[in-house]
View (cartoon, rainbow, N blue to C red):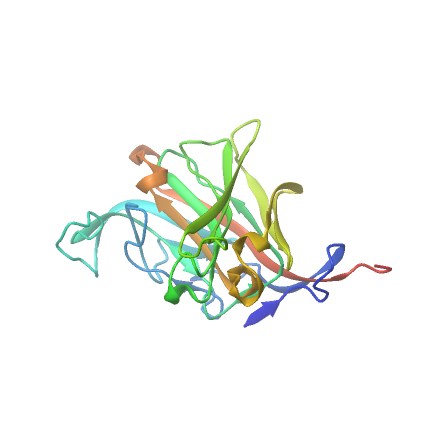
Length: 270
């Protein structure tokens, strides 16, 4: 299911109408019609092993999705003796990474996630998107990081975007915005983007915190942000950005109240 989000490509003054959502109302594993899983050790030298369809790491409970990071010995189905330190026979940590690839994808519109972030050194939750051409290579597929947070910096949120530089092909382009809150970020908040054909606006609750203009990533159909992207919700531990893990704080839960995608139409009189 690919959702096209803006009825009028030129419209910025829009009324948002719900097009799809997951309100997490049924206890158990996440709805397989919407969610798939990454599995194993994936990226950034992170320490967690992402499991598939395991309630201990990903479940719907009491009206929300819970992604749980745990310290435990877990067999690595993809063990490979070699130089990569994330390919041992057993993992020391587990977590989950849920993806909507091939199930729910969008181009333009508003995406919002209401979530409570885990705390503690080493935690690294994220809400992000990848182009559905990811199999052809990164960052040419485009990556939209709606929210990244690391427990080492409890007052900071990071909003990033990755692409091939339009002016110098084959060069990794990126844009980053760091938002610093007046106090540690606890409790539930709404993380959102509003994606138009010319820009992506980022929101923390109702505050606009960043904007990225799409022409920086190329013109026309060569621009990855004019094509469908799918959603990822994951909780990582350690790695290049999460740093040292405070085992005494584990297990940690990343709680998601809902995920919603909206279409836009011009406001009356516009």
